[in-house]
Length: 488
Image (cartoon, rainbow, N blue to C red; front, side, top):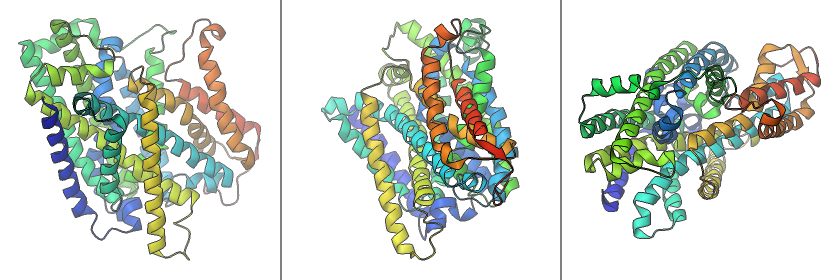
């Protein structure tokens, strides 16, 4: 594929998104931006969340990772499923009962001002870093295969991508994203299916034969039983479960879409439907990864980074049609994570730190101007973070993403667990210090784990340790009884 063709496809796809934006953003107001006026169809949200939850990281990192980790990621996906069940049965009823727009309002009612700000602050930190990594992955592919050929600097590429996201999310917010996610999920799933077809055709073997080859090889190994291994199946399962609870159930971006549905029962239908489909989709990505490994072995293809395997094969070996499919799939996986992140960060900062929803004296025009300023500010932060990640790209992005989640979502896990499963009040002013100290302790535990724990290496379960340390810190500075207005 030529750089010009790649760029034309990118532009055509973006214009399609703008058309959807134009339709959905008309007559949008603050409630449209924040919660879609609570009229989003649950089945549309469920389908669109597939693309939003998987993102460009799954599209590239998971298939590329199969050569190193086999199918062990499937145990994480099983954990995801049970995590979604917890969200549907415990967290969603809480959010709907309290009629929240920002889910971190629960922490203010349960604990107090500083706990509220701490929870919202850790979400903002988590989402900025996670979304920046996801955007970097896609932008870096465009840089390698398009802009490097034209000697365009990386920062220009980043700027173009972020400006496009600003344009189509600025007005419509979550109401627009619900429908653009649906479009993008469709293209992403088609890209996976067609990529599997193209690779099987190039290998000259029927699809069922190749599937048999996968399950006859070590590639299909899901269960690792060595307890000291960071991907032991029990660690993977519970890590996946709690990653989902934190990165979906305690995450404003993902919950904002659920809260745009009118009724709790419909939101729960959305979560159960989405969680089931998600298992199938993750398995499809792992099969695609195995096919990529087979093809790379047959063609003696080597890449410096596992994340480069899929784009290298798609663009340079499978022909123009496969390259087009890959590019559309990648863009379709990337935009949902970027647009949703920008919208949710704007929502959280505007409500949790600026108090725009509670301010009855400020007119809508001024609120809109402030919200626009917040939106642009977070876009600038994304721009800076992506440039920084460019300098540190030394391992699979999905590995980095879950490592960051272990540090930044752990305090949220501890806060919500303490709030939901105890009947105690915390010393609110100590909460920020506890939430900061827990990740710091986790860093040292992870860094020196082999010396301290007889060769044990922490994997994604570091998130659980972080949450536990936060929980115990809150317990140490707590007292019996709830706040009178705790909402518990």
